[in-house]
Amino acid sequence: MKKRGKNTLLSLLLAGLLLGGCSSQPGLPAEEDNADLVVVGFSQVGAESDWRNANTQSMLDALSAENGYRLILDDAQQKQEKQITAIRNFINQGVDYIVLAPTRETGWDTVLTEARKAGIPVIIVDRMIETGDPDLFTCWVGSDFRSEGDKAVQWLEDHQEGKELRIAHLQGSIGSSAQIGRTSGLDAGIGAHDNWKLVFRESGDFTQAKGQEMTEKLLSQEPSFNVLYSENDNMTYGAIEALESAGIEPGKDVTILSFDASSKALRLILDGKINYDVECNPLHGPRVRKIIEQLEKGETPLKYTYVEEVSFDSSNLLESVIEGRGY
Image 1: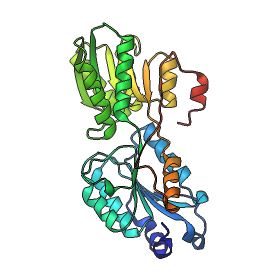
Image 2: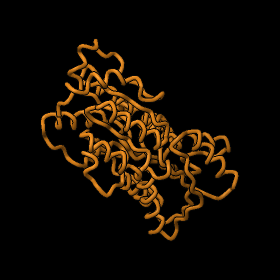
Image 3: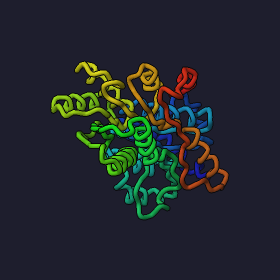
Image 4: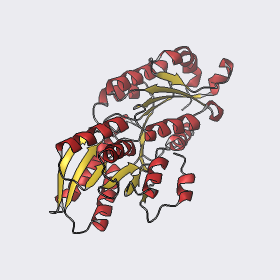
């Protein structure tokens, strides 16, 4: 797809006018050099976690001016309505591609129909969308969140076999693919074990502050629990702080399962404070760049690409893994 000759001037004029939350890739060459750049509008969920920030930086690095791209970044601040507005602004600018990291799975058909009518390919990253017309987006790249949940449940089965488990559950943002997949994995595990009981479940919106707040609420209600299933590392950090403030040893008094496997969390495994962490790789930038390169050549990329991921506990985690992490 090479339509930059007719839309680049408009893109340049409007690039700074998307929304207050928008920013474009710094270090752009002089205006006369921009005509050959591939213009990409990226609607990001927000900056709620270390994972999200690493995901954003990966996109900025891969879709840089030096690599032949002009990336227009919009931070939706966790609001779907902001993402819909951003996509419409991208359409009005006549960008070459739209990349969407959706806040939730549903509610995208109308605006993506508008993008299709404008002839702009849409690449979905990270979370999945639910639509009756899969042709509304070109392709998707991200994680198998149900598989992530199943891995955590399998580890719990293998390491807590026969024990009476009372599980406290910190959910991510309700309606997001990560929340849906990781929650369904846990629910399947609880349903398959008579000796597993769910004693607490609330959303911490993937943030450290709410992870701490929900754990403090859990402790104030005084339900007996010996497992904490936290749907991302940042909520886990908040939970650990709340547990330690209450004189409870995370990783010992309470078995902690987390998701993302960021460097900080992996160090907490070595410290014995997190028992198991399922990787969710945020480095999608190079994958999106590869997809765009394929489309530019007239090739057809895979509709769905699942990222390969691993999981960690004290038995397989080495310092060298953390040092080479990248996030």
